[in-house]
Image (cartoon, rainbow, N blue to C red):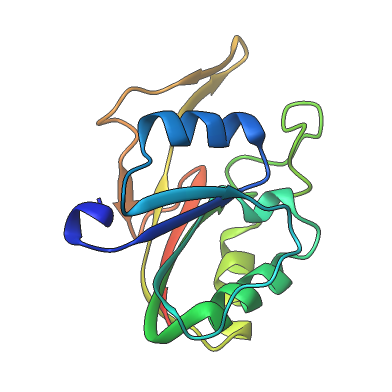
Length: 160
């Protein structure tokens, strides 16, 4: 959607499989993808937006990632971040084999506060119907982000 608004997009991911899918379906003259595994450096004060979607739970030091994104944003730039909400979807290593942890909603807010980010908006997204029969993905619109309501995932929008 940002590319449709005229922004140039750089997507980073450690997964070769994810990059293959992204390049096949989303690459264009203004959208490119590259393989990077954390930790990596980003240039300072160059991005209007940084999206950190379902990423922070995969690395040991989430604060360092938020710091890198903060420094990469231009003054007034916006960070959009989402992560599993430990309060609603507790971390279970066998179920979340690529995750290192989940963040409580409070911890997610604190990550932004540590880096003096101004919280613009937050919401929750519940994506799975979890029962004793297992977890089943909900179909949209049932999995929409609900503003100011906690969900299995915390979605935050903050400004530098």
